[in-house]
Length: 465
Image (cartoon, rainbow, N blue to C red; front, side):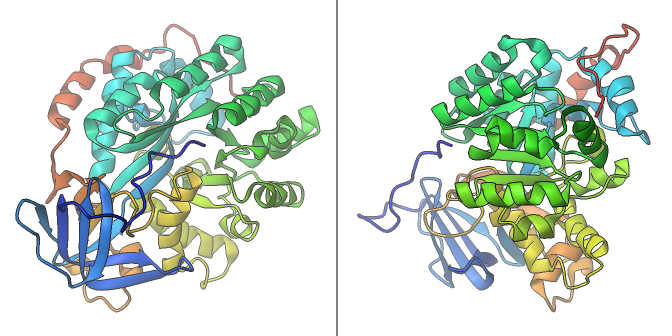
């Protein structure tokens, strides 16, 4: 995929003045092997939206530079929500305690036939506010009317990987619209928007469309973001109808030879699919990645993403929330905690997943999953200055014996004090600076009655699994 514009080689030439300096924090950094290292009493210097240095101690903020006092906080790379549908916050709590087929066919897909661009834009803005408050600085979105989501991204100050979703039932126009959006919006919002192609899933997009998408992705250097093997029922149905698993269908279509982000993969057929993904990872150098949203799987009674097996196969696994219609929340911090706990349970192994491994998936692995592994995911010179400060002085996070464990198992998203993207402060001391939440909620509330009306009997698609 096409990376964001490069900030240039760090340390070459005469450095300009600092735009922002964060002092007195403990910084979560990575050593050359990717292992997490905490730097006490750290100073983070930002120039032109890029981290210039992370040092122990260091100078105070020079005159003219913005200053954030980080005492009592841990500085982390901003979290990445690797798979979501931001406008679906407008449907939060609408369809509860249902199996997937009823959730889709009886509720979500009828309601989504009522979507307007204004509802999409308001939902996306409310979602951005929620993510900023939860320490998310980048999100990968896959939905409809995505120009509205791009506008919300620009307004909020967040970073995003955006794709216009399509089904084969839309005909060639659906795929063309997805490509048109990707080419028009690539590099927008001062480079904070990266774009992708977004076929919905192998059960709603036929193999000819998938193969054409693979060709377009290679031609234009675009990531492909797609739901795949969401649950075991989908995999069983795919085998019954096509003689191949969803993963094998993607391989045959050529999508596993592109930069591809697979959402969920809880229905992985280990014997058939893991060798396919391992070969793809070896062939492409790890460009095939998975996004895992554990809260939704627990709600639907699904299995969970096999993180350990995927990691051993060389496939990066990033953390996600899916949409708030199914997950109820866009809290990636909760996804990190649940990933650590659920993996211990399904593997019957208390040594897996460790707190440090969970932090790795929340930072570097998530950055790699969305194709931005060279730009974000680590606090280091030359990386984009996407930084969150987490307050660890509260009674629920004290005392601190193991800082990694404190962050994963004691801290919560509500402990995020300050959120910074590209050197710009989007939230300071819990005060949102870019979005008017009461105004957004007030306008959206007036549109909900028409949005949730299902009396028309229409659906945007049919879920068969």
